[in-house]
Length: 544
Ligand code: GLC
Image 1 (cartoon, rainbow, N blue to C red):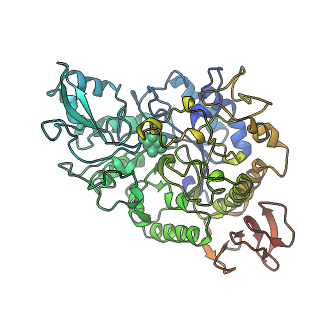
Image 2: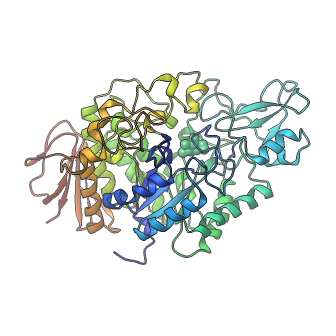
């Protein structure tokens, strides 16, 4: 491998949704100790880095994306000393660590927001957020903006004298008031936060909700229909999303990150309209990489996937940024389940066709083929915890277990994202499947069928989905660097390409078998094969 190339250009990053990864103290919630104890598993799996979802003190109105102190660790997860120990141990084991920066909003319990409320209309802290008078004598929200979790993006406060008063903006839950990034105190505070974590030795920062961090001055109406959903991938010239001024924030952080040694990574979450808008986030003086939602959103259809791949590569080439390929996260219906539905694309924030019939066997076959596809594409890739085990979405969580704000905000019509956040099964015959000490269910209940999907159940089975991922990650490391992708023509409904002389990848999305004769020596296949590649399977071949 060429050591001069920054690690993140080709890295496979494993997303750790911390409260569902591994629990060390038996409270049913994952924590830093749990993650630390499982680092050998991640090394053995063969990933290059972990991205840890927010671990900061939080009332957990949105699973930790509602932060009260950006420079500390929530006691449920551990302490700053635990975080330091984790960083040290990860580095000793050759793993990089990426932390999550939630800078569009704070928790409503953050000291700034509490002062803004307690100090009344004249409180200077109100200028750090978006407090505005309502329309129609104060009764109606200041504009028509909507929340990603459903409903209006404004909540009216009760002033210290007890009367209804101003409104404040929250593009997510009411417990997550948006910060005004034009305010110098906001900019300076986060310069300090970015430095705080880079000084502690993190290898990268994931920028949460990046496109939200600038608003058009005057906060004009967006023109949303009354029943509009937060479809940011379709918005053009929206006043609260992907506003051009947002790029100033990233330039600022890039200047900071460039002052550190060791190729620190800035990666954004950005669901915007198409690859060209996305490419703006990774211009040479901005972020290094960005998650690719066009690929994640694509249904199991060769033309749609190929269009997402080509569109991404074409848009990123002029700015010199590598692509990242992502199929699942803590915000999306697990792709194994999506691929088992007749309509297999994803929608934002779990507003999917939950409850649509699922053929899990088909979903599993496709998800295994998709793993080989994703890990063969040029650039970096993200794996969401449990995807290496072939976990499906848990669609039948009892209603009283649901915690995602989407459930209540949608008037209990969308169940939200809890189904992809169920704690991992590590071992054993029943809950908590080795997730932590003790017995009984963790914070979200695990289904009985997960016994067969635990790490222990798959560990030594060469046919398991875990073994498939391990083999693919090992081969990827051995064979691939930055060879370009060249498509091969095996028909419109087959994805076939080569990466230089290193690897050929063939994925059959058609309904007929595809002959592999003459394409090369088989290195790895998503199922046991004969001479042909059956529908919904994939093969890696050595050309020549
Ligand atoms: C991002 C996170 C998501 C969170 C939201 C608000 O989309 O991935 O989990 O709810 O930002 O912070």
